[in-house]
Length: 486
RNA sequence: GGCGCCGUACCCAAGUGGUAAGGGAGAGGUCUGCAAAACCUUUAUGCGGCGGUUCGAAUCCGCCCGGCGCCUCCA
Image (cartoon, rainbow, N blue to C red; front, top):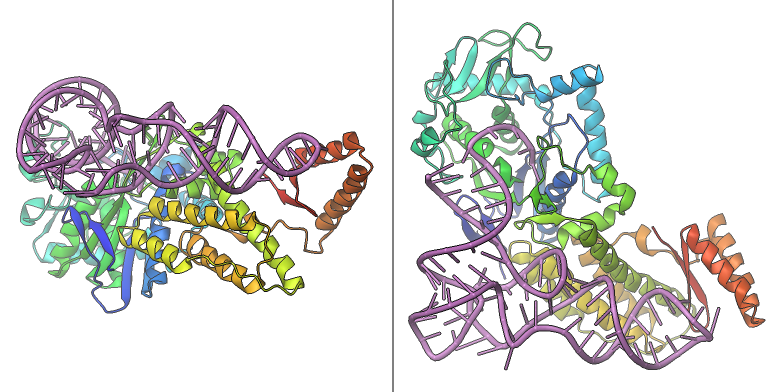
């Protein structure tokens, strides 16, 4: 069954066929690093992380580029508008590059916590000024851009496909009340490729048009093509970037090279909070660092993947609590499975746990092949989880090997592809010889002595107090196991 | 005003023509000294409303109601 993806450019699902056999070149718009990342970033980058993981799992050699925007986002439409990094640098009384550095680290810290694999290259906009100037020059030479008062603008009327991605026309845009007419622009929808820097603008570079800084859109075109070539397979990003950002990227890139830019445009939907759009400008965004104080990052990841990447995701405490319970259930299954494997390895067992694993696997892959339907894939893992739990509760002596194939499938799909099963979350059995484990085992031994003597007040106290410090005990038939809880 | 999306149980959320996945929460039961975990049973004759097409619709079409997004920076 072939992989099918929803291509925004065509506004429908189509079979995924990379330009080069067995190879996928992919670019996703990264963050502007002027503040801590929020849950919206998490949805976007977790979604594309799974897409990358799945493409690799499917056998493609994937080159994944994700930029870091550290200059150029103007606030407002006027020349006086300052960029976000500059604004933040004034607030924090730090150099803009220091702001960029700090929030870039913060970003990766959060993404690492979420289990998002690092992109192959994370190019910085400020590190590619030369490439951007070169592209602007090409656009002027070919007549697609013009200089005006030290700035350079793209002439949207020269690009007939402008508006194709976001399904709008220049006429509509002109009628729109929000596109203000700019004195130096020939058309209100013309966008800046290069902006003249005012004297107080710290982020500035020399260019053929004077001292200035690059427009926002140009960095993604310049950097994606530098590392992936003039035409590549996938360009991803948030739905909110469809217009104007991606529209402008297409206009610039196609005009500069005369070749198609991107084959598949993938857009993730946005996060809402209590039903309302979350945005930086509205100030109602929840940073990941705050979210992680309340919820394990893996719970956040699981929560995100439990809805489709093209659906909006409403963030609420109730929904997160639900996700927490669900992930715990899945984790418990893996933990029980591993505990049982550890026991089975100590004994000679002949019973075989027979589950139609191929069928489960096939259904998960079918779900993923259908435009990365992670909620469906997760649902199937839950079905498998249920069957495994039911089998384990029969208390038969299953052989280690028959248990291991099940564990490996969970690891392969839930761990490798979806990234929702981590070793950390499930290896809680008291088999490792660290001090913490030894101490807990000691307490368990003491408690079980108390239980034998029917001193339940003592045994319950031990269990309650351990729970308070984050360790939960579970009494099995002939042993007591423990796990860390958050 | 233009373009577009969504409305499925108490909550979250798949399903886009063949008779409603999955998770959480709730209820009952099994196991347990008690818990926890797990298992079993249970919770939408119905998918915003009204029409239409069809042998058959949550799924397609039309209208209406409600919510949201983009058109300005945002993932």
